[in-house]
Length: 252
Ligand code: PGA
Image (cartoon, rainbow, N blue to C red; front, side):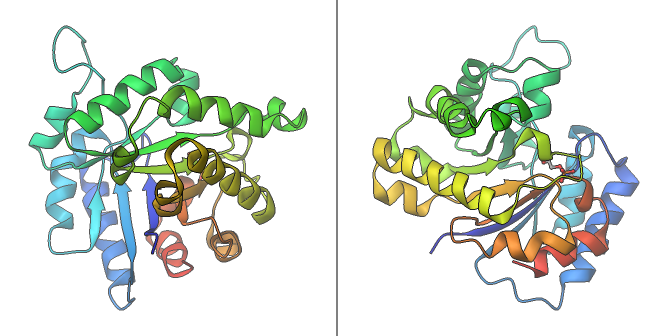
């Protein structure tokens, strides 16, 4: 059975005290919920990872990082390596969020290297991809996503997918209040599974969790999560409030 996952992408929000408080609030809000086959993830900014991991100890909440550099170490001022993340207890890292792609010029090629670094360190990646509004309008969304997947993932081996979670995030739906319809999400998720099946086989395509991200909120989560190929969500804005995030977790 594919794992269900609700992951909060906190982006550049929450200082240390706010991060630990939010983790406690989320934990309280879901403490009476049975989370069968469901992972709950939050991603505080780098400087709050240690405190957050500590706050999440003895809870079922996992703390992951939002990004990392592909090099092992060296003269990359301001960057953080996989090994550094591992050393503070981080096991999973978000790679290729559209904000990293657009504001920090992360190309498919760089993201392929980042994925290699994640896997070489026995860590897990939440790999994000998704089309721009222009591509959607031109009805090129499948082509665009197909190319992102080929460029960043096709050099991998089937067994690598044990450590990869995918997140489809149409750029036009991120932080805009505009959500892909459940049908649009399902169309893309089924397409992604198909692309993976052709390249890596059915075992991989059946087992990989594919999350949807883009303006998921308590009011629309259940309908989106009900789609066959949607295994959960990557949640931005609505993950910053325990009440909303826990309602989304309960919708899975
Ligand atoms: P949003 O962000 O839920 O605020 O649209 C999603 C994301 O960027 O992962």
